[in-house]
Amino acid sequence: MNEKTAEQKVLDGSAWDEFCDSLKAAGHIIRSDKAPHDPFNQAEGYRYLTRLLRGGLESFLEFGDSAYPVLRCGAHETIKLGADNPDNRYESCSVNPQYDYRLFGTRGTVDYLGFGAVINKYASGGTMETTGYLDARDMDINDDGSFEIVISQREHAGNWLQMGPDTNSINVRQTFQDRANEKSAELKIERIGAVDERPSPLTPEKLVHALQRATMFVNGSAQLFENWSESFLPIENELPPADQAYCQSIGGDPNIYYFHSAWKLAPDEVFVIDAPVIPECQTWNFQLNNWWMESLDYRYHQIHVNKHTAQYNEDGSVRVLVSHTDPGVPNWIETCGHECGTMCWRWIGASEHPVLTTRVMKLSEL
Image (cartoon, rainbow, N blue to C red):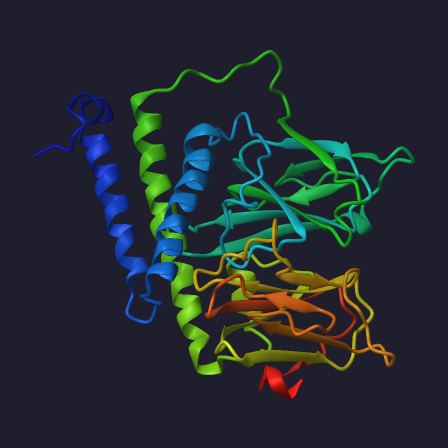
C-alpha cells in the first residue's frame, strides 16, 4: 500500500495524530530508570519537554526556511538544554550550503563573540559537528563596530565562515562577563541574491515535515542529555575534565574546555570547588543545572559565577560553594530547591586548563 501523501495526512488528521503520538513517546525519557522520580524533578522534566517543543516548532516550522534565514534566540531563560550558559546569548538559523549568505551587524561590547557553521543532528542522531568557526577576535571590524561575514562553501576574501556540503545551521555565541553593562552584538543574516523575493505560503508538505522534525528534536535532545546526565553518576560530586572530543561532537564551542558532572547534597552539606590556578583566559564560569541539564533559574537566583563576578582569594585562587542555604561566604551558588542535578565549569579561550579540586563538607565545618 502506498504511503499517504502530505495532503492526505492533513485532510484526515493523521499528521496531527502522528505528531501527538511522537510527543507522548518522549514522556518515557523523563521516566528513565536513573532519572529522579520525585514529583519536583518529574514536573521539571515534563516542563523541559514543553520547552524543547517550543524550540523545535520555532526552529522547524516558524523559522525553518533556509532561503530566508532569521537569526533567533533558541535557548534563553525559558528554553534550556545541554547546560545552557547563563552568560550566553545563543542565536541560530537554518542554512543550505547550496546558497551563499551575508551575516552583518555591529560588534557591540560583549566580551566574546563566535560564529559556527554546524551540522545539527539533534533531531536525527544527537550530534552537532562544527564545519567552520570564526572568532570575532580574528575578524576585520570597522572603527564604528560594523562588520560583515560571507558564509559559503567557496572561500571569500575578508571575514569568511566556511560551510561544508552538509552544513545546515549557523550558531552564534555571545558570552558576557558583565551582562548589565556590556552591549550585545546586533546581527542579521540574508541569502546573497535574494532581491525582492518572498517566501512561498505554507504547504501540507512543509507542515508535515516541520511537525515531524520538531518531535524528532524533542525526542532526540531529551534522550541525548538524559544519557549524558546518567553518565555522570559514577563521578557524582567530583568535577573532572569532560571528554572534550565528545563535547565538540554535540555542539561545544572549540574555544572552550569543559568540565561536567553530577551533584547531590543533603540539607546540611556543602559542595566545595577550589580552582587553585586561574589561567590567562578570555573568561571562565561555573554553573549549576538540574538533572535535565537545564541551567537553574538565573533570573531570580545566583546559580553561576564567572571571571568578572567572582571574588578571588589573596593568592588569586577561587573557591566556589554550592549549598541549599547561604553559608555566608563569597561565591555561593544556590540550589533553588534541588537536591541533585548536573554542573559545568568552563575555561574559555584559556592558555591552559588547570584541574579543579572538590569535596563535600558539612555546613557546620565551614
